[in-house]
Length: 154
Image (cartoon, rainbow, N blue to C red; front, top):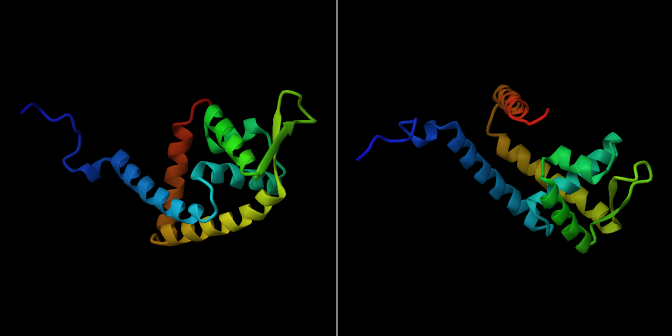
């Protein structure tokens, strides 16, 4: 047998593989919550970001959603079409910038998003509650550093 291409003696010594496993567990947890609301994780990211924009006074444009969520433009556009078909959001040209498309909640979407956010917040607390306060702060700082260090153009 030829020399192994793997750097690590054990699979769990690979930080990438650990991230893969953690992401799979997290996505399973999210799916449990979001299935009850009839939306996907991508759709949730869009809806939650849209609600966040409202609370923070940020522009609710399609471009800003793509930047904020890090969902590529094509995937975001398809997800928005599905959200429109579900009558959760509507899109319209921006009054401030003729090149921008604004996204807004419908009454149905406005009713759904607080329930979904509360479900995800509870899942978040349960999932990450396995860490003590200090370890959670370390996890958050390290994750933020990896995101910042690996972001293009940031």
